[in-house]
Length: 231
Image (cartoon, rainbow, N blue to C red; front, side, top):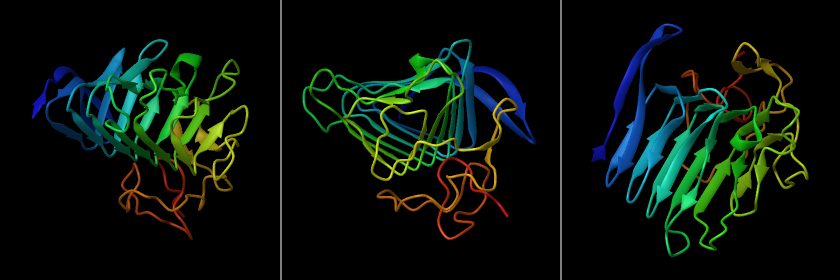
């Protein structure tokens, strides 16, 4: 595979050590396991024939935010059990046919503090990718953000989106997910969170763990977002 990592610096996060990269993936496959990327302005780029996977990962934007920027043809992106802090996931489709780029994004937590970081599900060129978002939390901490998702070219199921105008409907929920401490960057769930035991059946591969490595599920069903509420 052709992957071009640039080592930025070494970081310690809790009891684990992470290397921080800016990554570009083309003509090959890159999978991140237990990695942190950031704080940077452009976290990851995926271009023609690139395949990218992360489980778990933590993507952190600097300043006003950063971009996870797939921009090419025949791309495959799969992200599970990960945290996005001030990082927008752009889905730039330069294919000349629909359904050639694929995104599977499930059981992640997105923290948004600027309108530029929302998920944009619009494809102005008329060639939308296959984009499936299941059991994620999209939460805006800024009152200037009216909706955390825009557009209609994604398949959305079992997500918590707050705020969201209008409500997405279906199995999606517009409620405060009730994190332990947003300001302290503790995105675990409090008891009574609407995310607890609320995940819909996933069309992707079954996940048996969360961001912290805890088993899924801990209750009757899996929890929405990157963290499972441990008893």
